[in-house]
Image (cartoon, rainbow, N blue to C red; front, side):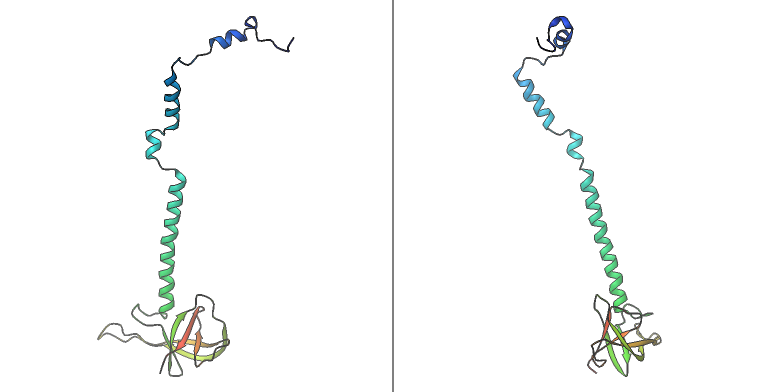
Amino acid sequence: MAEHDLTPDDGLGAAIAELPVAPERDDFWVELRAALSEPSPEQKTKKPQRFRRERALVLGLAVLGLIVGGIVALNVTLPSGSSPSCAAIVVWHHHSYYGNDEHHLVRFGAPLGQGTFPPCGDTPGGPAGSATAVKVYAIQGVAPSKAVAVAGWPTTRWERGLQ
């Protein structure tokens, strides 16, 4: 004889007989499957949290990139104390050198002496402002007649203009 016989007299058969039975309709199972596979009205309108968070993160990073890019662009093109309409120019030995951001650190060489950021009179008829003294350095491997570096501008290569 088996270890446990399922007979009605042990109570298990009676318990099984009391379990609810699905109606004897073929369409019941079709309706049940359709109801379980179709999302509820709340699920249809609700987007998954993960996608909302990812979209917010991407948007936030894009805005942050634009802000940082704008700040970097202003710092690269404007000498200290100048206004947005002034060009990034340093004068050294009576020659103008124009700022060009290298997007990496410039390799400073030997000190060359003092240069100036020229005054910027960006308002017609207004005061011209004053020149700002700066320390000028050679760039390793580059002749000072071609380009120089300026203290406080670690990623800017100042290239000599045609004068």
